Image 1: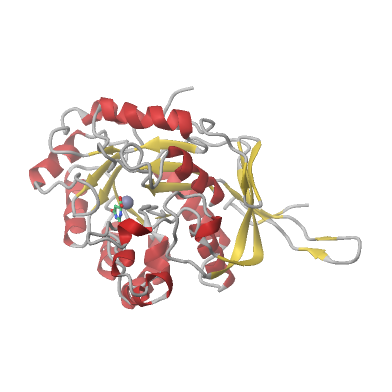
Image 2 (image 1 turned 180 degrees about the vertical axis):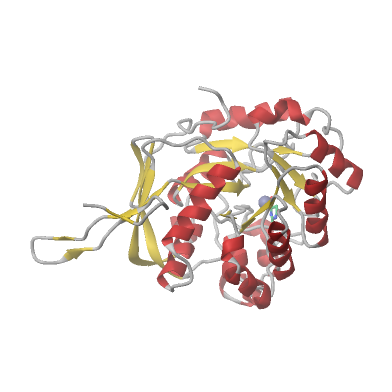
Length: 383
Ligand code: DOR
Ligand code: ZN
């Protein structure tokens, strides 16, 4: 009989003893994970990812829903570009999805009409990959004013820009979600803002929990400075420690899956970002094994909270099964992302995804994907 672990929604299956007396270790069942922050490069850079390979990577990482960022080429900022991405997703996606709209210099008046079809509005207030950065604070205000209050706004806003974003949300009497928090000063400011009743939520990426600015000297990153480029940058140990100490302030884990090829990472102008969809869950399960995280926290931050914050529908008959004791070594060669590498190459992890069931169909089992391109659903599409 499955033993429930409470409201978090996952359960143990009781260990069974096989005929020769050996023990089958208990499998854990969790709801399908939701990644509210991925970059799939489709349209514009499908040599490193597209809706097919990116959603294959998602399922192979235990994610049954992904929310795609708009800094593609062209960026997704109006009806034509939204259709471009969604048409591609409809043909290729293997898991469920939605597409963010980017806040640009000229779409503050028109973006709201597309809100029902979008995952939310993404605002880039600081420099990163792509051309979507907004410098003009009057434009920030226009977007905050116009975007529907019941639809998510996600900001890439580091340090002082993050403080400004929280102020604008308060002035416009709406919520704001801070992407990829990485610094002690950020997590403490969010905590303080929440204690004052401000409606601010946040997510943290695995690389800001498992890597530090020292990591640039290790493993695959050693001797290749471009490979450790990411925005926000890898932070100091004191920042990473503050994130772990304030897990209760972190609403969601989000991979910020940002695939670039090693050739690009090793070039004179290395683009920032790491692939993350296939390594997040084993890293979190390893942290559970080490006593730094609980299974309930994984469920809460990778399912319950993102589902609520981004108004996502339930996925009936959808779950993932993990073997919490299986140890293995992370290898890019086993991954489905097209970018062909991982900053965690050779890391020994404990806890392995065994099976994914999406809407009643087995779509992943022991490393093999069986979901066809086009079977994923747009969660913002009626019917
Ligand atoms: O490192 C990053 N890469 N940070 C971002 O905000 C964007 C992303 C990308 O698209 O490559
Ligand atoms: Zn991102």
